[in-house]
Length: 194
Image (cartoon, rainbow, N blue to C red):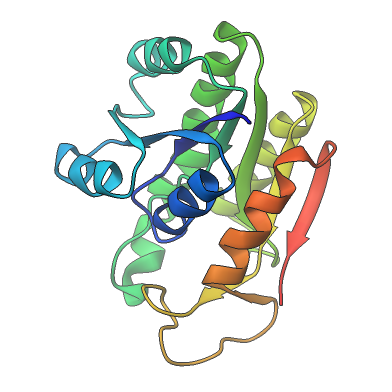
């Protein structure tokens, strides 16, 4: 089985991925930038790694120390309140560009484990976030990685806990299960929708 370095382990999909990855026999390091969330990651059974993706040197050291076979980038920088998403556009774009590049640099330093990275299955309006998504996808594919192109999440803990959003969409637990199935997928873009 594989050693999986999960960036974004405390997020809505990250917390669902940890038990599924462990059940599939993988060893998991769950990364979060928040020391306060490390306890939750440990409680789920992963090795908690507290590091900020923007601290390139610390990230590289953490990834090299763990020695993963797979890096799963589920990082986003989104508000808890869906109505504030527009205010986070630049922050989320930065995590998809600078943050993703730091993950690629860490991967290279750790012997080039396979990278799988989250993106969205819908067309974003022109702007920093759309440019960032294209950059993330291009850079991950250039490394021989897999782009996980998710529909809008719905289900407990998502922006759509009680309602089914417009297509493209995917129920959050189905998205997590599908992600684990795709760890061996060949390089390319995989759309994950209902």
